[in-house]
Image (tube, rainbow, N blue to C red; front, side, top):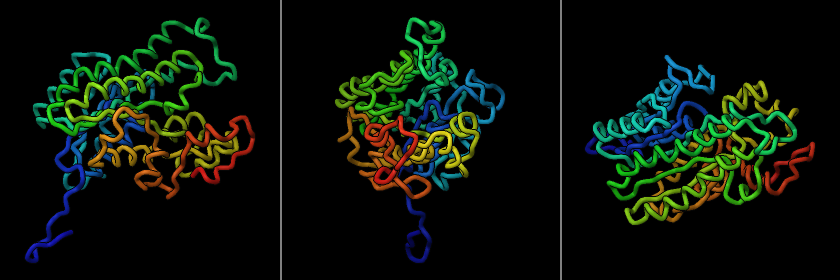
Length: 322
């Protein structure tokens, strides 16, 4: 707190006056990114399909966009705040209405985060051998494409005209895996397409945005301890997550959602963020660049670990990786 002639003056937060839209902020990485943007002082519009009155096909009623907005408010302090807007990002009219509201209420958009997904419920990762493309249910596969790709396209198409109104805008495409890691085949087919396409989207939109002084990046967490990963996959909580390593030793490299939130906040507050334009970035890689840590004080580098360490081994050694 600074003082002027004995009067306390509030220190401005780094994103004070900035406006963000986190599309897909109901839970997991999207929720954490919204919270950390709010903590840095931004006004954050949080969207998704699960509200206190309606549950999406993901089927997790415990996490809602209203709760996310409240968490943003709690973290934000004096300048930032969270605004929940129920939105199905596969419905262009709903997205247009959302962007019009942001424009009407704020007159600008500085940060657009496309963290839209929800396709896991249409995929089965429990089988040791994933089916070939032609063996999969086509309707479910195409739904994965819509949720993981079309929703991003619709949102960017509607929101980028507002983002480019002011130089310095940041578009963040969120995916699972770095460009290097995703060069291999991440079966099943529809999942692979859904998670590699945002990397190409970033490459293309970076070319289009740079003439407006704006930046596009693709951002990925590592092995994310999302709500579903904790309670559904491993039946643990964030407090005792290490117990899951008995079932999956390599879960030792996992990270909390806050870690990717801090990665985004570091990007959003970097005055030289344009140096990353078009690149595929990870939470672990950015931690080395910006010096932030996860909630336990460590800095896991999950994608480097998963590339360099034998994932078929029954033992895990994260020494040098977190």
